[in-house]
Length: 334
Image (cartoon, rainbow, N blue to C red; front, side, top):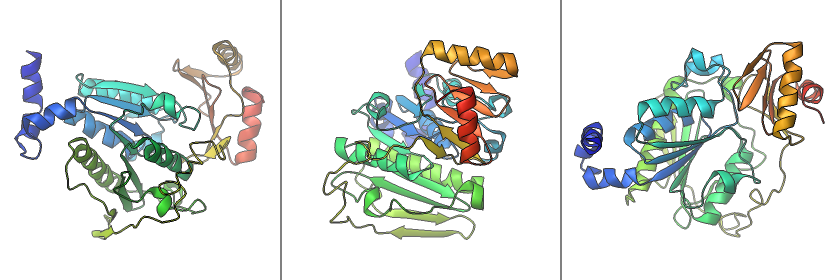
């Protein structure tokens, strides 16, 4: 009965000759990691779950905010304040119970990447919002020969690029550390742009999982407002620190950040200390005595302003970095 249900679920996809029954079975045995579950990652994860990818690993450090709902269709008003990875896992389980969903409410960094992403993963989808994490994934991908797909979208524009060792350039070949990139906070973002980029990213992931020969090797650029499409050839940088010299400085912890401004209005992520479960519960009980908390088990939200996670990490709404550090010191400690 389960086999018949599976056949009916994917029948329209199997009819497509580039996939077929054998291709669908291959997808069922495949796995993918999605890093970042915002406007891009939440949509890409949903598309891959509906397509029948056998296992998805979801990684995100953030919580759902009301302003996310304009473009992050996997979430609804009932998810506001909830960790995105948890909310996404709950929704995807309802969409396709055949897909195994693993999730981590963590900040991906050089210290935990090998714990969160198996080196036997078939493909990684980069849906993050900062260059440090992108370069970390780039290092991890090149070193372990794992294909990954870079995606970004802001305003009406978006980019897609497949990074495959020995076949394409890598991110370090054309993105520079000191680049000042636009953000959703500074120029806004259209939900049509993010949905377009996610669709392309999920489609490239499916082609990679099926080992199709015509995987895109150019950097794709779209401006959905102007209906503009460009294919940009990216040559491998013969002096690239990563894919040529194999110097994996981000993977080796070259310069880990203790405070990061997220792609959300005045939200800072801080982690200057690690805490254990007992300390986390003590913080939670202290906050209960002085204000309103919402307990999500994996984290606790205090007064809608501070979200503290079990590992000591906190997301803090503040006017500036100085205020964020002060609040962290008051409620979590130094």
